[in-house]
Image (cartoon, rainbow, N blue to C red):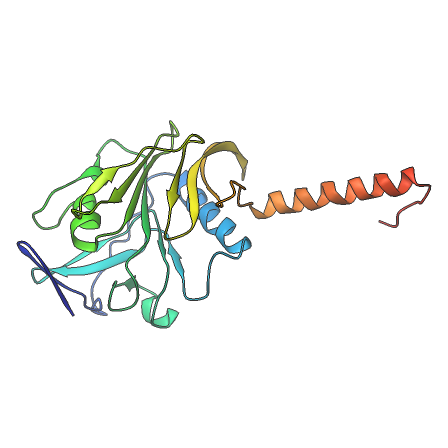
Length: 235
């Protein structure tokens, strides 16, 4: 399966079984927690179909001018895969094994600036690879320390265009029918900035601990109402 863009011939081929993937540690202790939180709220809200895939530091591949390119975004959402999970346990090749990711995210944690790299020679930079090779519609770059979120969307010229947030400082993702924004609060003993999802009505997609707390408060309110009516609730 081939795709041709000016100066580039792209083949969507399965990664060879003997290809050695990089085994680098994550850049920052906060990255796995941020990624897990994004996936959890999607799953608990029923917005993660069985054929969808979320991945963290997981290789997404293409063969560019005969050379294999693998990039591992800090988080990505693929709406639909067309093969079994066993076939993509090491890496994922769009078009061959399913759809192009609807969004990829990079969490800033160093000063290298690789998330912004438009390097075109092999191996290409991340920004160039997501924009020109994969043509991912949405690309988010999140600064963990400052809470700054940059959101790029592919325009009609197949180029990334920096988007402006809405009045609530969120970005609409049509492919997911969700808003993405920054929220500050506590989870897993980390009190800082997080990326969160909001639905079309502006309701926050909750994490598991928030759902438990919400239910606890509901039970307490019901118990108080029963006691006010002279009935001792059985808890």
